[in-house]
Amino acid sequence: MARDVRRADRHDYPSSARKSLHQNQDGLTDNRGRWTRVTSDKIDAEVREPVQDELLCLADTKLVLGNWFAECVMNGKSLPDFAAMLGMCTASYGQTRAIYRYLDLLDHSYGHLEKGRAAGEIRSMDLLDEPPRDWPDFIISIWLAEQASWSMASGFLRSPDRTIAGIARKIGEEAYFHLKYASGWLRILNGADDDRGRAREALSLRWPLALRWFGPAEPVDRLAAAGWRDPGIGDIRAGLADEVQRSVTPLGIDLATLPGPDFPPEWRPRARRTGSLPARLFEVIRFKDAELAR
Image 1 (spheres, rainbow, N blue to C red):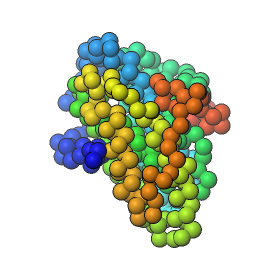
Image 2 (image 1 turned 120 degrees about the vertical axis):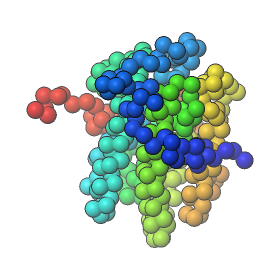
Image 3 (image 1 turned 180 degrees about the horizontal axis):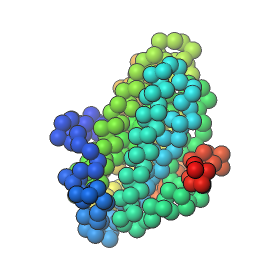
């Protein structure tokens, strides 16, 4: 049986890692809070590009997910929903910016990542391309996006680069509560026949896209082989499937009966998505003119 990536790694850091992302232990800032190049020059050439590719896919997914929360907050069913969604929105934005700032220490420009890219350059999970059709679809979508992005991040918890490991740790700490929120709503949806049916329908549409984000099976995971990811992407994918299956069993769903991921010609391996971000979604997530905020 595949290792349960989320639970196993969560148990690795319940107390010792509950520290700010901006502490020296993680190699992220100096004593004045300024970002430093503590580890960026130590990344081997063979993994430098793929590491950045993976982190950018993760950061852009969190960017789009944060905008999902912002756009859908008024659809919440109660005041606690509003508070939770706004909190998850800001946490997602914070994770995005932390990764962008790290990539700025390598081969990217923070300003370009945040403000200068076109729709075709955004590397978010295409699970989030289409807006939710209803509340059950929203819950299923954010739950799968959080599960998938945390599973991907968890592979870097033991990275030799302390900065990457620290960012992954922080994502895990915050994802724990985001997933608690979504899981609570899954239990509520399971209590009503109509909601349960719509949740099943949403899962059948969204799950193949979540699984596709991890790409087709590859004989060798370059990052795992180089010691930068543990476990490899195949085990992470299997761990995600195990975790999702445990959660949807009460809904009467067997993931084995759902469609599998497809990889059409427009699949972009480095971006982990097909095609460009839809124009209407790009208009939502793109950086707006700073002058408008004055």
